[in-house]
Image 1 (cartoon, helix red, strand yellow):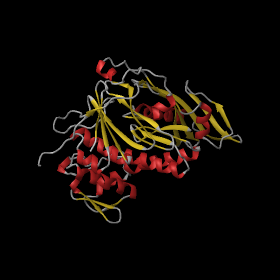
Image 2 (cartoon, helix red, strand yellow; image 1 turned 90 degrees about the vertical axis):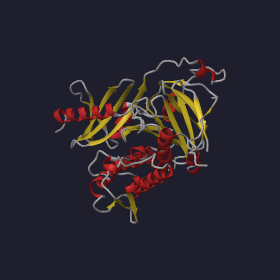
Image 3 (cartoon, rainbow over the protein chains, first blue to last red; image 1 turned 180 degrees about the vertical axis):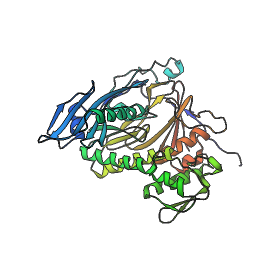
Image 4 (cartoon, rainbow over the protein chains, first blue to last red; image 1 turned 135 degrees about the vertical axis):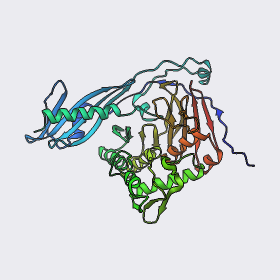
Length: 160
Length: 253
């Protein structure tokens, strides 16, 4: 047979309901500070131009800074922490919190029928849900731009 | 169970495991390394060096880059070129990539490579291997939709609904598995060459396969050419389609 077989899609009935929105908290402020500067014994608030920042030190010696920022995209809100060493080099970026806004309900009755009577909007364990979504997440472009802005701010105000 | 996320590979990479911070750091280190080796945007990456020099002389690359290129070549050949990591300028195709002994790469003619369609999946596989080596028994790694789960506890894998991407459908529940989804809802997604349209504008394609690298590559092929049975059989994969309104379809070999 010379015909190319492109395969066939077969409809699948789903056993449980669709769920809305994703959100995840990865790190509290304190955890983010410790993740970025595990050797520090003190974090002193040193806000700059309205930006939340802390000076990380050990035995009074400055190790660097932790800066916390939020970026808002079309559908998402991301809180992240940037660790910058005393030399001005990036230590790491840790996402603290990720939230997506809710979209509208799907109205198509065919779509609802596939849930075999189960109700949509079942209770969510949010922490689990974001992890196991296959399918594009939003790009991290806003975070990358935010990091660039924080580094400029750090160079102007915090770098010794 | 702890989970962390960092911006890497042009997306948000989240890792979750029943392990210590050190295990997650080790997994992120692997992802960072692959980011540096295979980025198209860095002058010092293996991919950039191949684009600059491999048409003149063989270029020695990291064994991971070599492995990703070998897999890319297998996918290109099996799909008759539907999957191709060369950017197609000046007429170059996957057939111009020669993989030589000693992890050296030679190009028969000048070409630029883009491993974006497969390196993310490979990074997920390496991150999972690192977690397991560090003693994690259950966990998951998700790099912008390239997802791998493992462990004693079964986990539900969900996919977004193209018409309302903040809603998700449960695909199924597994203990182990690797998944990749191609979709157009956030502006990415493969472009159908003949029509110039994004092939996933109104639907998403998900492939489940033994490794995330294979799933990542295959999902682009299925998006462009359909759930070709001999490809699904050869790579031991299954394919799923979610249409615009969230109807789910499956295809097996």
